[in-house]
Image (cartoon, rainbow, N blue to C red; front, side, top):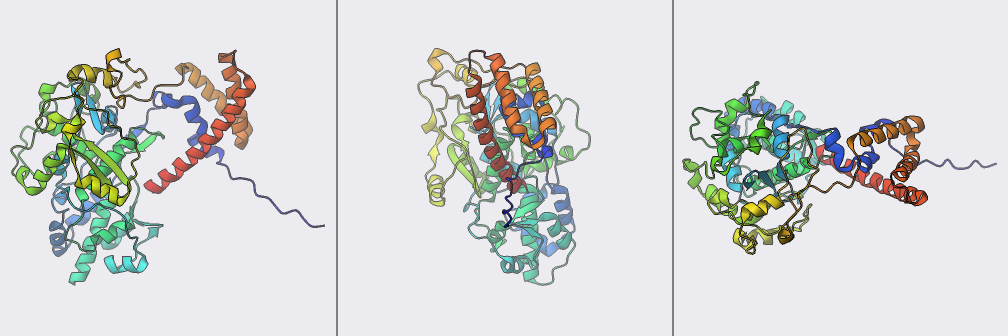
Length: 513
């Protein structure tokens, strides 16, 4: 008698993974996730290890790097930031407009700010992965074949095998310099919290140290992308990528009276170098980061220094002039497949103009553009004056309606102000999505406990029992609704949430290594 073929059951996540990031967590908690369990922000990078490599590097290789667009950036010693600071600024960051919501209006780190702080020029061809080098090409460009995973290379392996090495020929010096820049990109400038760097960057370093790529624009786009992603966390531990430490220096530069952390700050370039001793300190000054939330809520426009770089000699170099030109326009920046908009019309005071009510941005993220579309947008920049709402002339009144309220860091923003009848057309992109759950905190905790009991009792078959339990709870709260119909809807919703959650997990693991 022939045996029946063994059929494999569909793979499901183990109960450990379910408790770590369950699909029903979003269904029940929705916007209350941060209220019950605030995320822990951290800034993960490999700046110290890469800078140690730089200090013992062969002088001939260092000369090559100093001739490249990364030469000024290497003057900045390793800097760090705290989770309290990141949480304070992300509470006031709106990812749809890439701006801070401060008591007196919107502000952001402009292209001019980013260039003066980091020294990375913002001009050239976009940073894209048009070619993925194979093993022979990798060995040709850096001399060895590092450990790799898919299309990424391990940064620690690169550091361990190149640090302290001596290059005897010009070819070896170029290979050593490319390996260092590759580690610098993946570990600091374009870091995403992982220990890997995309191998596609190597093809952009073929003509090194000559520059034809917009490395500053790529770093700027990656920073904005990381902030917007961290602003909508889906896990408890959130790693903020990119040069997030520049935001700390941005506050120091623009609010010198509110954060008088240096008695004498001599002009320097990049400007981050003068703040490095403070940023590297083990103990933070009092009333700086732990109380930064309350400090941000009391800022006034008179304390905001619009142009902190006017005394710098580097403010007149061609790269700075070009960055200043970009500030007065609506500009899109690109880093590989990440596209981010800078909206100059929302921060007019930062480049010497009066405040005016901006139009709705009408931008939906994530932005997906073909190469020719991106080139066309960068070639035909539109000035910020084209995006002003001339029907409204009271910026203070508009901002009071459009901006979301500031709250202490231990509370979540669930209350949204109601707009005036005459301001219904004002953009709502500042506001967090309205809460769809009318349950109190105690009720949410009670339902979570019930769901966890179901998981422990039924193991991998939790979804069916969970849907039934949610249906019974919904029936008790709404007696007029039909129980059977609710069960079916909940089943369908859970399946959709599982599929979406699996896709999110795969994308997150791929991007962060």
